[in-house]
Image (tube, rainbow, N blue to C red):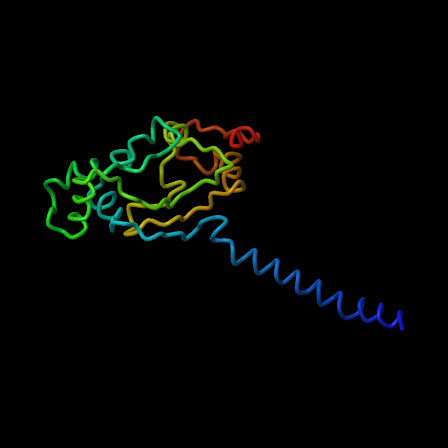
Length: 189
């Protein structure tokens, strides 16, 4: 009796359990990919803002709005006052600009939802990359052609290491570019 129960467990139950566990792991891995690497992430923003219009058609440099990108680890989210530099005069009667003006008059920061995010356990410094001549599009994609910004690149350890280890090839348009650091401490501080 005990031998037949053991045979049944080994021949029937164990393979079923292993199969279910493997399928669960594989399904979870692929279903949660977007959450892990963020590719395709496009949150709804409080104000419809077109990078295609501003950075594309009007050719406003990224650094005009993201002022700290050359001097800070963070690219900085533009303050409402930056938007109002133009929109206190331009297109004031548009619904989205009316919403923007209300935030400005009330002295309230726009609650933008972050699109590009490096995991909290990793350190990334925008200014180091920008000051080396690395174009924003290398990581953020061609935002000047995006009506709504979305994450197009993985911000994973393997993606960063790939660029650091292969910088002369990947960034061949930058004269004298060298490999980036690939020691743990460079990003995990």
